[in-house]
Image 1 (cartoon, rainbow, N blue to C red):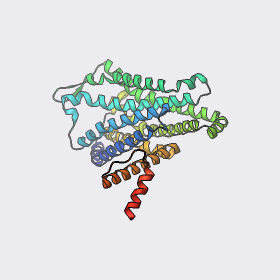
Image 2 (image 1 turned 135 degrees about the horizontal axis):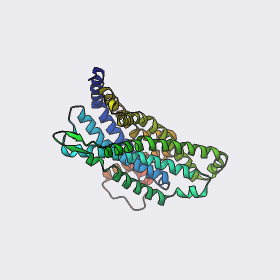
Image 3 (image 1 turned 30 degrees about the vertical axis):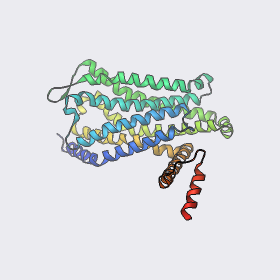
Image 4 (image 1 turned 60 degrees about the horizontal axis):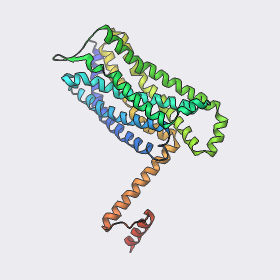
Length: 331
């Protein structure tokens, strides 16, 4: 075994001890905020928002499953060293990441359709189609990934069956996830940019007079930034996985160490979406500020109610209650 590869694996394991808890915390907190903000009345009516919501949900599921396992792996505790973990670990990992990946692709297609000059394509971008696409996509990917539970088996250690059919399946699965899906993401993002530029004059006129169109434009910008970041953070591990599938001779300690590092690199995209949305969408920032203000007012009302121990009269608004509390405080 290569000494440099062994050292790299050890360094990756040491880094995971500190990085994985941070990844887990950031992913849960940021995606929970995403869900609260995207579920608000201003953003909820738009189809693209629902793809973002499902993406956030599966990002949390992925982090809750993967980060603890990667952390325990640093101490030599492997879930794959159990009969259940041997069959389930790869299936859960690939299914959650693939569905999250799919949501970004579907959102890219939705933005392309909504920005098109074609009436037929624009009509595809609606809530009914979005709900069906999300439902069908989750079902299809769950079925498509199900053979992963039968490929591995437990015989005192986790082993994998090897035949031509499994090789074809694994090759197709990696190609779809890291090749076709990322390529289509990039393609539809470029087509969306082309549509927006082609209609720039008309869109500017509409944006000045139509709030919905302004929100649509900001959602498109948020998605484009998210897609670019997704490609940057997923491409390195995609190259490694494709090489390992088509060139088995490259399964060396050095490549294994790089694979562990690039997995941690890929995990960053699952919490960065929150910060990317803040940076690229003013409507998102506004809704986030409104959410925090409402939470702050709710805390104030709770404290006042607890202090007075009296039920709040019907029809009393927030300003009246706060004003009364201030008068009582200074009296």
